[in-house]
Length: 398
Image (cartoon, rainbow, N blue to C red; front, side):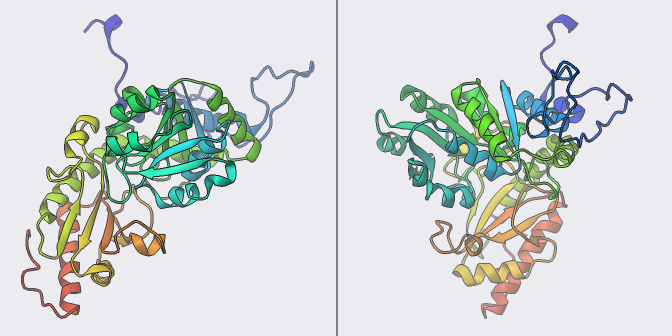
C-alpha cells in the first residue's frame, strides 16, 4: 500500500504504543511521572511553558487525555478522579433545569445519585432504553435535553441501539451521552455512531489491574456544555492525580489483548452454562438467545465483552451459597480486571435495587476457561447439596 494513502493506525496499535514517542529530554521509552503541582512564570509574568497549575495542566494527565480522545475519535477528553466524578460532571454542568432520560439498568451508584438529582433542578425518567418506543413515550418536548445510555447495562447486560437513540435525541435537540465502560473502545466507539459524549469508569477495563480509580469523558465536538464541564472539574478539584494517570497509561497498553481474551472466554463460558440445571438464566449479549443479540452484533465489533450474569434457581439463598463455594473466582466488587470476580449484586445495592436477588454478576478475567467453568460448576453443585437437593443433575454442560 502507498504510504501516502494508508489509513490511520488501528486501535490495537494506538494502545500498544500509548500514543507517545520516547520522552524528548531523556529518550526514555516510558514517560516519566510529572508530579509538580505548579509551574514557573517568566520574568515578564507569562507562562512560555504553556502550563500554570497542576489542577488543569499536568503532562501525565494530558497524555492520558490525548490517548483516550484518539481512541474514541473525539475532539477532546478529560480525566477525572473516578468514574462517578466523570459522570456526575455532565449533569452538574447542565445550564438549566433539564429533563433527562436514562437507562433503567445501569451502574447502581450512578442510578442512586440520579434519583436525588432534583437538588440541581433536573428531573430524571428511567426507562428501558433498549425499547425505542418507551424512549419516545418518555420524551417531553422542549424539556428533554439529555439522554444517558449505558450499554451493555450493568448487571443485566441489556443492549441499547446507540445510532437509533442518537437519532431520537438529536431530533429533539438533545444530547446523547453513552456509558461504554463495559464495551470499551476496543468493541464499541459510540461517537462514531452518533453519541455526543462517551464516559468510562477507567477504574475498570481501561486500567484493568484493580489498582487505579479514574474516570474519563470524551466529546464529539467541543461546546458550551464541555467548557462548563472543564471549568467545573478544575473548580471542585475532580482531576485525576499524575501517579494514577501514569498507572492508567501503563495498564491501558494491554487493553486490546485483554478485552479480546476476556470476551472470548466469556462467550465460551456463557455457552457452556446455558441450560445448566442449577440456573434459570444466563445473561450475556453474545448468546443468540439474548434479546439484544442482534443489536450487539452490529454495535460491538469483535466481541461481546467480559461481563455476564447468572440467575440461580432457588433464589437469593441459593445464589449466595453458590458464591460462597467458589475457589478461583474472587468474591469482590468491581469488574474489568485480570482476575475473575463474582458478586451477589443485590446485597451490595441494598434496599430498592432493581437487581434480581437470585443474580450473580461475573467479571471474566484472564484465567483458563476450563478452570473458571469447573469452579462454577462445583460451586453450584456444593450449594445444591448443602440445600439438600443432592448433586444429581447439577453436572449439566460439563
